[in-house]
Image (cartoon, rainbow, N blue to C red; front, side, top):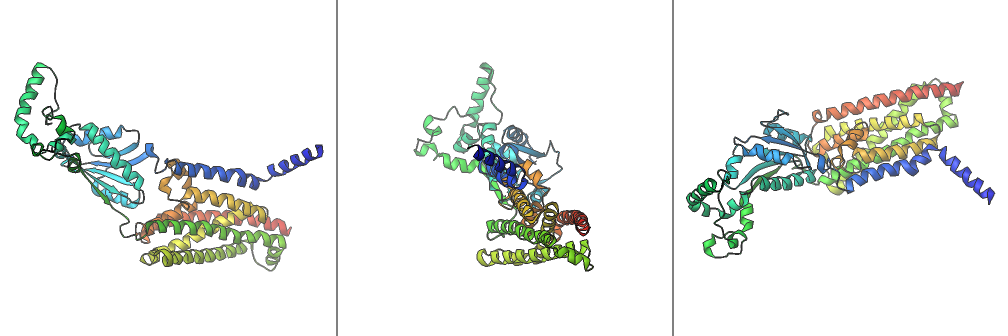
Length: 440
């Protein structure tokens, strides 16, 4: 039994000296648990207590500012204002552009006649939405109605009474004056009185013609004058396919490219790299050749995946051919850089394969390849910004969802090119030293 115990200790000692085994056993599962936990628990989409809403207050009266102030006090929203408390220098036209470009998932516009609408029993507002993130739009719509009924408690009764109140306004004014004079209670100005309404009318149980046909459903339709408009993605035939196709293609291209670049380690171990160097090839030429092969293979693989998405799910690849081809090539170059840097850091082919699984799965989870990035909280998005997967997915999203051309993806392409140059440059430096050591 003592020998068995020593053998068990030996196996644990071997395990603890293998960072790849540790990573595959603990690091990757922990990353996945965190990411999927945030998504499945509803903490994504900036999480409800971090939901970023752009608000533009064009109201010429006081009620718009009051509503936004009350809405801002809710714990579920984080509001960026435009209007009297403007800190963004954004008008409704600019808000539309920001939502269309993905800077915000939803914007709330209060029109000039918002206060007039409140006095007429109508909640007039506009929601500009990016339908890729239906959670944000739905949350805002619900909280907006809730805040409106709390801020203006007479809104719903005013709509329910409709024209009936116009006949009793004079009497209401008399009653208001008497109550304020003798009781000291001050009623809100320009709001109808409802003390004359019977319980049957208030609760919708009076079906007689004298009640004016009052019902809560019709009243709510009158109150709810929130116009919701999708400002992007109207022409996308199958929205989910663009995300799933691009995400799956990018993730598995990383595995393919990683396997190719890991072959360099196999060539070094077998002596092939040494023979090539002795024949006159330089270390830089060997790495660049491997990189070009990886780019060509990755480009072909991505093109096949896109065509497959078109054949099976009608993915609209022919609407954006120049931008799509550019994004495919740039993405392949960036992922080739990832494969080279993994091979440079690994000492053996097996170790490179382990690093590949750990890094690729982690980057795919937080970078938006497994599911849309809007479902993740902001701090994970910040971390994802240092991964090429994030920028590749941003580029494909801009192409398929926002119908951007080449000029619209220049930011993503520039960042991916910079990442590629950095990773390939570091790989060349590391491999030059290793090959020089191998040659003695």
